[in-house]
Image 1 (cartoon, rainbow, N blue to C red):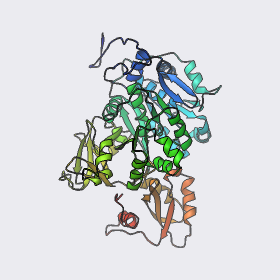
Image 2 (cartoon, rainbow, N blue to C red):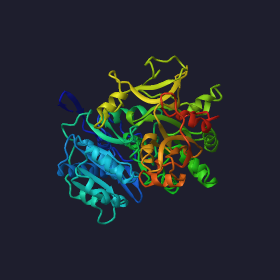
Image 3 (cartoon, rainbow, N blue to C red):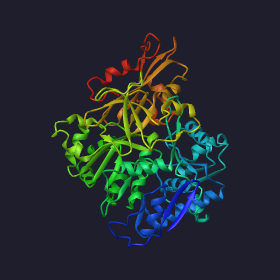
Image 4 (tube, helix red, strand yellow):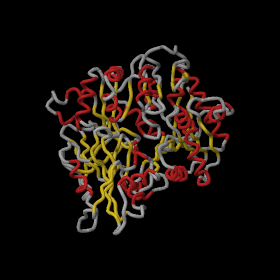
Length: 551
């Protein structure tokens, strides 16, 4: 056994005996400390076992381990060291995971940018992150070329092709790099991942997540899972989303193969299932598309052992239809936030199947119970007092999964994290006598459409810049496919003229399309309270009347 002490942190390691790639259950590794610990373990324990499949390529644990540690060597050669940031912009690609693990292994962080963002949004996030190296999918290079002169901190751009075709700059980057093992000065509290979420002030905020945050999330959110021999994990959620970059660690943690799709489209998901993927996490909108696709698609998706859904509410009729269509599939609902590395509560399969029989059909509308190491409080946002059981209030969370803060925004961090470590989610709800958490609406103006977070002020900022607009309010309205749809209510300047179609087109030129309003109402004046605040609840009320979930 070897023992190493780094700045007061002691780690121990034993040489790991090689076991056959097809041995099951695989050897039991020690509890991880860093995000790449389990990759390192499986590369030694089952070197020839399948680790990752993507499009027409596949890597064993040994091969994938080498790629990650060559990426670490390449970053080192570019001068990237502990505390530095690199950035990744592409659709789903194993290279993004490789760079996250590689950067983390040397104490640096990967800032993953939403590839659906408009040029101005990418410009802001890359500059805010301070990224010195930018990895970009070749499909997105035209966007980067258009803003290259606005990225002064970026010293090197490395392109990535979808299929590793000849001339792939990223593959050459790996080939030229030395293999570098984990940095000796890396601590579990070092930031390894920066996820950008839309900001309530109209600009995205970089959520800083550490090795400890990600590892504790993997261990805690893993509760209730448990892969069996022959299982494969489908990674279909976008990696710029915490549901992608956190979920991909599940397969790595358990040493089972992952099948990654470039996008969560029907053909890609079907291909992954045909390749053996049988456990996954997706947003409810995908499930709705499958049920509408016909009997062949429904039968194919019946091969899933576990369907975990979250990031958006599941309409009850859709959930009941899914459980009827796939009686052998385990459904798990999760509720969480980027700020807590992903999942905070989960509604487990037994709750899905027995809620009505147990006399608690309302629990199908809940977000389940807190996962291990997550504490939940319901607080009156006006007084800060804890609310009694079943009383409505703001949901507060405390967990070792909690971010270290918002990058470059200490004041924003202080607004949502108390001195004793409670995170004010901004979501409103209650906890029933059984400990089930119900998320009913939001204190902050966030809309979740198809699993994507859209903050009203960001869209309002863009619409308010239109020369005809006097004032605007953006709200979420019910949508059976996407959970919520973005809607704008606009009052025009006196004598000005604009159509709803024109205003939608205005936003589509300046924002990622999923953030843009699906519809615009033009009215004479927005409703306000006596202090002048726009009454968004009054605007929402006609659309949400009669809905079980009042967002």
